[in-house]
Amino acid sequence: LVWTILEKNITGLGLAARFALYNFFEVAEDIYINYVAEDNIVWRRYISNAWKWFNRKINVNPLSPPTLVSLFQIWGEQVLENKLHHFIHPDYIEPLNFLLSSTDEIKHSKNNGSSSERGNYRALLYQEMWEALSIYLVKWKTELPEIEELITADENRCEECEEDQEELQERDKLIKRQVKPLPADLESSINKVLEEDEERDLTRQIKAIAGKESFQVVPTRFWDETKPCRALPDPYLVKRLKLIFLAQQKANPTALRVNRGLDYGKIDGRKLYRTPLEGKVFKEKERTFENKFWNITILVDASESMALKKGGGKGGDWLMVQNTYVSLYEAAKGFGNKLNVFCYQEQSGRCYVMRVLHHNKLYTASPAGRTPTGQAIIAAGLCTPKDKKRLIIHITDGEPNCGVSVGEALKFCQKQNIDLITIGYGFNDELKEQFQEQYGSKLYLMESIEQLPAALEFLLKRKLLENA
Image (cartoon, rainbow, N blue to C red; front, side):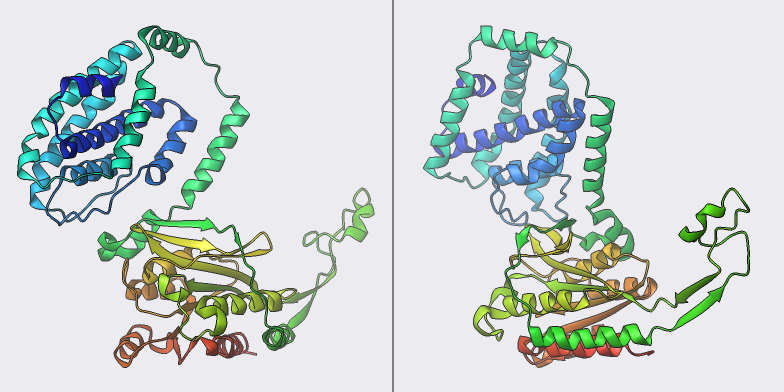
């Protein structure tokens, strides 16, 4: 209905101008839908996360000469996704401020009577906004869409707009009927799941840690990967790593603690029958040990360059990395250390940290995007449990190219008493010097990825057995 009225009232547009009008209409309607959905707890949570995946986008460079289509996308990203472009072309400022100032009027149009009345109101509002923006059709470069996009868009809109007024009135009646609220237990369960999902957005925590570099932080998301890992362990590496863990276990000192009839301590299940008699059900002797085990986190650079076959044999570097962490997983079973395996990458302006070891199963990621090393190290530190000493072994093939600097990540690890070791390879002499300045003694350089198993074995032996 809205598009039909808008298209009828605004005539004489060329193909490019009509395409821009359609983009404006879609963003404005998305803003309206987003506001209407806020009244429903389930839809509010769902839609807030869905916009970034649902909307089709073009590659926008805010500093390039402006276009109307890019302007509308920037407007939508700012309102729907809270994504701010800190540096934009000066010509965007005036029309963008106009669109943002009109956003509240779009939102509150939901209070204007029936569905058809609201549609008519929005159509007239969009027409006024478009007329105010039409001067930029002459000033700015115009963009032509692919013809298939226009055909598909028109077909979809026509199907929606063929409903007559009687159907709209029937829909109004259905909407006005009292909807039964969700059961309390179901609503609380949904809220719990959604809150847990929100906790996996680490952007705020990383901004707080980054301090002066908070403006460089890109949105950071932590999730469980679901792509099965098909890589096989290296039996020789598994055997050598098991020897390290066995030596670590044997080096863990034990002691005998004697409880001489005290009325507190740890309960001995064999003495529970004494409860009604004297109440002395606690252990008299207990063998204890000093906890020298570790939370070991393997943090792997999963940027696009890791998929290349630079030196990892038949399957490339990524297969060698997978074989190594699969072997470590097999070797660590049955010992006191806790193993975590994370991969990280940047795509579409977001940093993704993916857990590939969870629920006693190994998964993998697909290398892609850029390398947000600093943020990934901070995220790995935040997601590593604190019940044991923490060790992060970071594997990368290149320098960071987005997000927070490595220096901030090193400060965070030092403050949190996290041991960080970076295994790097594939660097030229200039990058080697730069990395040695950044990481200092926390850097282990390799000539090629084929040396990764030996490097991991050496570092684990040095770290886990240094005080044995």
